Length: 320
Image (tube, rainbow, N blue to C red; front, side):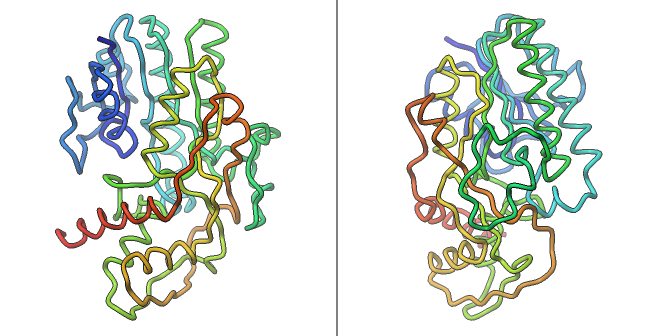
């Protein structure tokens, strides 16, 4: 039986990865600063601890463990990342998690490790057009991320790859493009756009207004969680290190995302545009490289993922 450690198992993507690995027959240990908010995870062992503390990392990484999945980070949606109010914590906490984890994985002869990077590493200057044609992996340099979160992610990519070069640790890196779905943060300020739109629509009365930051013409692509998990597993089973985009190439404006949520709910909703943190103007995944390296790319539609996500968030709103 293979043994895996999922760092950030109490979070959205980490929780889904735990379930996938258990379905595949792994022995799984999860570690997070908190337990999962929405699900009782089928872990064989779950440790509540802060990966910023090297003693915690030493305790959860076993000698010769087969795989580590490192999702843990100090992060959130635009309302958390782009205000500038959390920059020091984002850089300090996330960097420490990665420094401690990669060091211990090397010291304990771990078989392979996955690191979750982000599309936020791409230069801000090539994301000023809402009709962004797609971000190729080669566009990362010259570096100019749009946030301190992006700078930390880029640093950590280089950290893991340097440990691979110098110490022989097998590393796999993906740049996630806005992953969404059920059992993720949907309120409180750290939620991402699909969850925020679903929540606002679910809470709104028929004919009511919901607030949209900026003019709403900023664009993104969003990837449903099931395809994210499949992409990570395919990457880990391959001989390709990355970094590689794991994201949809179906781009949509925030206005249209909100109206999609309203249509799914069957509600007549009006949009009210207000000031707020926006991030880049246009961002989309370019998937030529992942098709070449993994002979696979996400195929699901945004609408299908939003329908599942809305149903789950509407249930959360009703219970709350």
